[in-house]
Length: 203
Image (cartoon, rainbow, N blue to C red):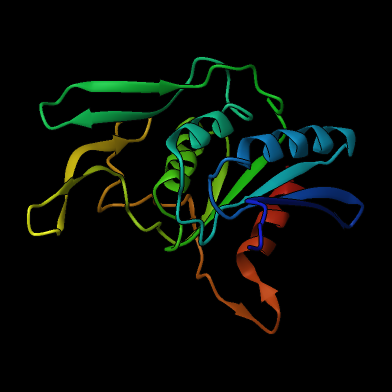
């Protein structure tokens, strides 16, 4: 078995400005622990801003995405809203003070960003906490239960859907980034990352 950590962190120097790149590949058991460690490291490194790269992140645990969002959002902020088939709503909120409250943040997304990654991107966008850059996300915002059938098959039943803090549906619609750019890397140039760095350098 090869264990791959769900988050990585590095700092790059761009024309005298230090910018942290936090890449989250999925929201798993170790994500919040790693992200909190990296957030504290970013403060120690005195970076000018953070790029949160959620591209090709297929999602993961809801609780992980909510706790992760609390690193950047005020305590008590709604991260996502669960709506069941009867229209009943349940809010999921941050429950800790943010480690990084005011440091400029840019979130990168593409059509491979789904589920929990969309919850985080949607929350950051709705609160104006971060600019979002890239391609509209996948659009997976449903809660499903697995029912075993007598013929040894199974059936997935959608029992609820996720909304962003401002009430936008995620399922089937995705998260529209503030700045739309093709997710193509040509001649080793990542134009989405380059745009994020440009924004942070000028912030």
